Length: 265
Image 1: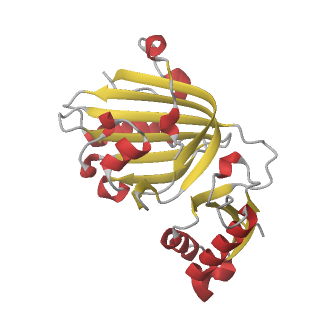
Image 2 (image 1 turned 90 degrees about the vertical axis):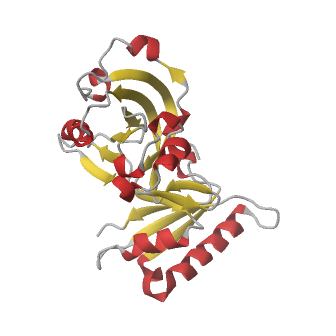
């Protein structure tokens, strides 16, 4: 899974004495120490849109949006005497402004496993702490810039703050907007997502697949669609029109995934 953790070009030396407010538009909490910063351009990032939990043999958020764009990440450490709720409130108040939309927000155990967020999603063990001490906030502004905030207090007492920004390279003239992406075999999550729709709302699900030993990519996609339709059952299967992209989908759509788009009136 390619996520925000893929950033490899270190800018720590450059930013060690520089406020990240000029980059993310967010002023760090008082006395916050910059631990490291990373940046990459033209990468794919997965924006978390749900709690993290087991998916097959690994861990991933219940839903993600996969975005191509420029990535910037920073990690801060705050002294152990800081009040966790004050730290979160400081960052949240700056992120939920200027027409930005909250895509996902959770705290404590409702976020899932802190160990999974730290090690499986963000790829940074320094973020690991008690499940009950974590906060996660994901916002998006009208210009398709995403910001992801993750906060936790480590066992040693220090508060760790992870800030990610993804500036989407999505064309301004895009006809539709992907609202969620999921593994095609995760039927329980797909069913929960569809069942939560309002009575007058329906979806198109773009399905990507790949060639296997016995099936072409197109045949594999048809098989996956049949499995999802059966999993949705008679009650919900008519709410989604599936489109088989086989292996012709854009890289940002991934492989063996379903990308949901709302049907406009």
